[in-house]
Length: 424
Ligand SMILES: [Zn+2]
Image (cartoon, rainbow, N blue to C red; front, top):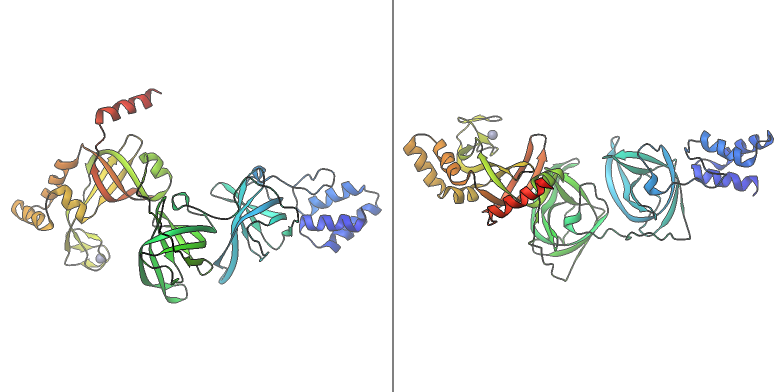
């Protein structure tokens, strides 16, 4: 190999200017440094932490990359590549995010430059930065990264493309493709970062489950009752649960086929459910330990609809409260606890009466706490199966109940199963 070729190799590996590398290389060689050693020393100088092994292009398997690696050179197949607009240092910037795979594993990447990445491309990224996100390494492809497209495509044991089912989506997922039924959809006007703007928000469903969504630039194909294919969506947490985000970069096309929305909810242990950090649709089974204060007959602020105490709203002061019913109940399944929140309809069912009945009972007793007491007598100490939206924050885990049924499981069988688990 000529010096020029060596310089070219190095420059592309390290993502630096070839002429600069060539000058350095020339100098070292003139001082009788063997070419391999010269290249090694330049790799160190230009910040490639790899040992490089005798001048071969330094590379790292994806599975070997740790958050402690400063910079790496990787060869892999682009599984997904999705554009997204972010506001960075005061201006809008289009970035590309997705997943890169080799034989050993998969890693998330963010490309800050327009490299023209497409799913299926085999690339070598020289001098890619490594950063930590949620304890996992991620690749940053930026201006100091030398990116080349390889003619020989790499075989990887992962599927190219972002086809996903709703149940598998997690906060942080990028460039996902889904085919869904639009179960709920409403148009809202919000105060966005560039003034008032219309968005769509609602709920998607597919065979695997349901998830809420926001469509930042209303797509005509997204309408209640319709079915759509969405490419390049991303998933972000909103109010404690994952939400599908459909952006200006997403492609939305109407579908002719029907989608059967799965009615099977995931049933989980409370500890596992809470451990996910939030799930839109989940079912837990446990014992109802207590009905918390602020349950039964309550009053809400007419302005902000929050629960008020003694006619006082924390934000709006002295207000004429609106009467309402709700239950906040603590459910325990042996692995953990959640606070289940029942709306007015569910509360009427467990109370066994309407809001009018509750007001009547409170008037007669001259104490509105009697309504909560009645509910306590009916449900505390029993076992319930609750399905709803679980959100988790620093104040604890709340399960917004959609259904609330007394468990038909045999308590004796459950006790035996629990004992076996404990013994094991
Ligand atoms: Zn208020």
